[in-house]
Length: 121
Image 1 (tube, one colour):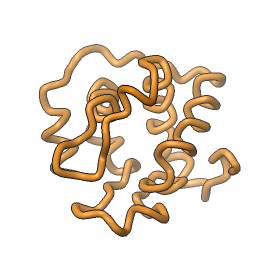
Image 2 (cartoon, rainbow, N blue to C red):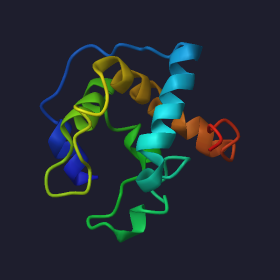
Image 3 (cartoon, rainbow, N blue to C red):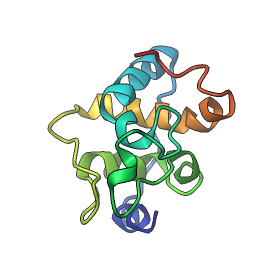
Image 4 (tube, rainbow, N blue to C red):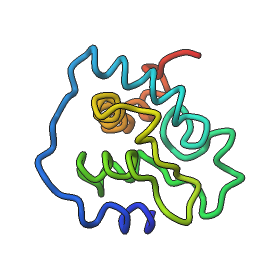
C-alpha cells in the first residue's frame, strides 16, 4: 500500500467520474481480464496469482478510500516500481483505463455483495 501511495502521491487533478452503466460493464470486463488474477475478482488482493508476489498485492477495496481517481489512473498507466504492478499504458487506452478506475471505485460494493456483480468468466 505504501508503494501505491508513493507512486500516486504527486498526481492530482479533477476526477472524471465516468461511472455510467456501459462504462462500468466494460471496466468490469477489462478488470476481469487484466487485474483479477492478482487483485482478486472482488479486489481484496486475494487473486490466484497474488500470493506469489512481494510486496503482497494490495487490496483495491481499501485503496479506494485513500487514492483519488486520478491517482488510480496514474498507477494503472505507469505501474509501481519495485512491485509486481506493471504499466498498462500499452495494453489499455486512456478511455479503457478510466473505465477500469470506475469499476475499481465500485469494488467495495461488489465485495460487500459477495461478488454478485463481478462479471463471470
